[in-house]
Length: 208
Image 1 (cartoon, rainbow, N blue to C red):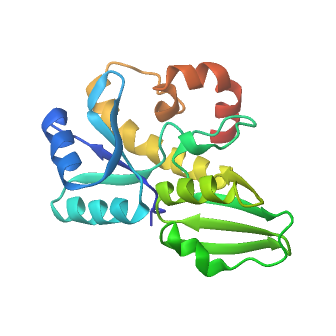
Image 2: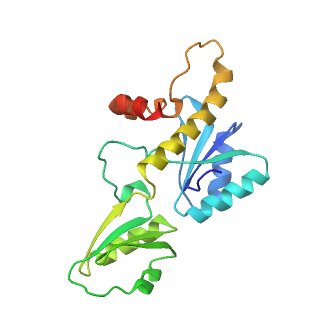
């Protein structure tokens, strides 16, 4: 079973422009983009994981080829810090000069998915919507808290998703390129040229 994420991959899209317009008019979308040189593969990034799940179920029922994946902003790179531009919904909150934290106050920023206690003075708070995390971050930073963005998923989980996405894309692309004898080790990563050039050794190490 695929892990639910805020990014969906649609394959075999015949009319990417029309499909993109359709989904943008139906859901609250952060971004839609396709892989270079292959318009039939479409990535849809949501702010809210509930919207992603709803969309997934809708298009699966319509017999579309749709899968959960990670976005181009979440590709695992060495020591890359998480920030508000990565569309993450999780915050690491440290109580600096505050002895008590009222967890119910978090609901004013948006629906909370999970709260984990790292230790007595720190909490890891995950919202359903990345925009809720942004609101919480901006507000708490002015109220004596130390707050930072953290990744919604572990690096290991990301690599598992990348491998699955790679298999999906390989099945899509390979029939179109039967004359090629050599199969790339990781087509999903390779299609993002900038990332692969910076991380080629790490990519091959992790997928083997």
